[in-house]
Image (cartoon, rainbow, N blue to C red; front, side, top):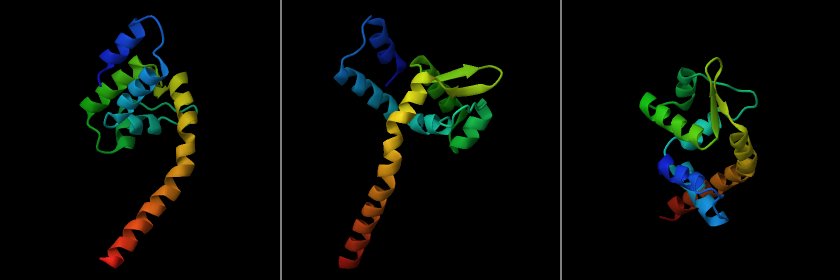
Length: 124
C-alpha cells in the first residue's frame, strides 16, 4: 500500500468506516519493516535518530527506512523532531496499547506451534 490510499481516505473529509479503516491499517502493517519500526519506537519517551533506528532494526536499508518513516509520518503514527529524532506520535502510542495483548498471546501460541511440529517429526 502506498500512502496515497490513506491520503485519499483522509481527503474524503469523513473517517473511513470500520471495514475500510481496518483494511487500510492492515495493509499498512503488512508492508515490510513497518511493525518493526513501530516496535523499536515503542518505549515511552523514546526518540531515535535515523542511524540508531536503522541499527535497532537490523538489516533494514536506509532507503526503505526513509520510505517507511515518510509513510508512518503521513498517517500520524510517527513524528520527527530535528533535535531528538523519531518517536511514536499519539496515534502510534495508542496503537502500541491496542497490540499489547499480542505480547501475552504470542509466546503460548509459538510454543504450541513448536510442540505441534515436534510431534509431527516424531511420527514421520
